[in-house]
Image (cartoon, rainbow, N blue to C red):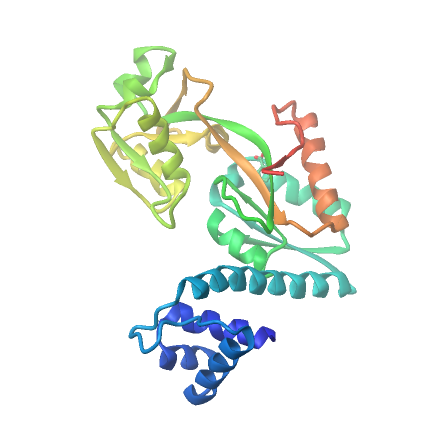
Length: 307
Ligand code: BEZ
């Protein structure tokens, strides 16, 4: 059996149609059908339900599909890692979610560039879920996000758990109510959440925080990103629960209040390919912990999640 068989089979299984699969693979349909017949003969099993339209997989076909997808992902990973190992010049492509820009990310990048001038650094903004895909495809080498997503080919390190605070329009009655607020105090307000897509995102962490405490905000306003959410707060459209680092933005039309519950946190997660043991990544991780120490920040002891 060859990799080609796996690629062709996955395309047919996902398109559920031989013509569309052939188009996706840029080949004609008859050779595709022949290859699939050859694959079934080779394995001595039936992978497709005969004459089914749209194409349906047998139980054996479904088993084969789940393993074929993993094998193809590992092959793509092997390709990108080998290219990386063989590269003469060093480079590191970093994926990040927007909110990490208000935390330590700019400092980390500046310091890394200073300490490793020979490494070409590229920054790409993308959601945590897109980071997982981009890591597997070799588009980025490291991702900084907020969502805990299990994937066998991705290693995750939770760097720190960032406390959430609430942003209110300046002069809002809640900012005078008491020194520290609870989520319960916020339920009658319009809760502005972000990013509205793709999901799951930080928005779901905020919604889960209410749900886990048996609370339901009266109105929800979903918006694209943090800056827009804060602009809407400033305009008096509602309130937003944001990571503490946003405080650094210091807008004079938004006031921030702490929340009373130490479990109201959003993690900052560093993700990389499971098999990537490159020096650049180890050095970046060491630099992050060094900066946390220098800035007297709270962080989690270095450990790999799900390991
Ligand atoms: C942080 O704020 O702790 C952080 C942000 C981005 C990358 C690494 C750490």
